[in-house]
Image (cartoon, rainbow, N blue to C red):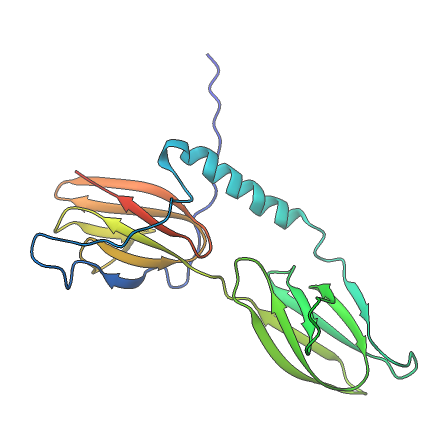
Length: 217
């Protein structure tokens, strides 16, 4: 019998892996915990492998894109007086708009040929917070704008028996279940030590998603 093994995507490396939004049991009457109503989860454990694989394939496709190809947008009124503003983001692929123009000029990395002067650069990338920077394009110096994009976190409500020890990506939390955490998009390992028993699940968190995870004895 032939056995096929498929590697799971790597866990998300989060410099701040555990960001607690709230301890949902703090203000509830004893024995009664009113949890907020949530929309349908983006990841269902009946199809966890399919959900994880599809997200991993989307991430791989994004990485394979030729991001090193630099687009050029032409805005200069005179070719002789044109100055070049290079805009880059981490990650690449953000849509670049200038001042009050409603339509994006290009996607990062890109060069904008324009006249010298002051401009407002607006950046938008799906799954990341919109960024805005003001820059002065000079005549006799390299004009570069590099912007790190901040991912939009998703939130996870963890339900577990009272007294459970909760861990996210191996990091111990001090929260009492149920509790809500903000996590970077990506694959996370979430566990609850319920006495001598450990319950652990892998969860794919999407940007802006709000999920509920039950870890029972």
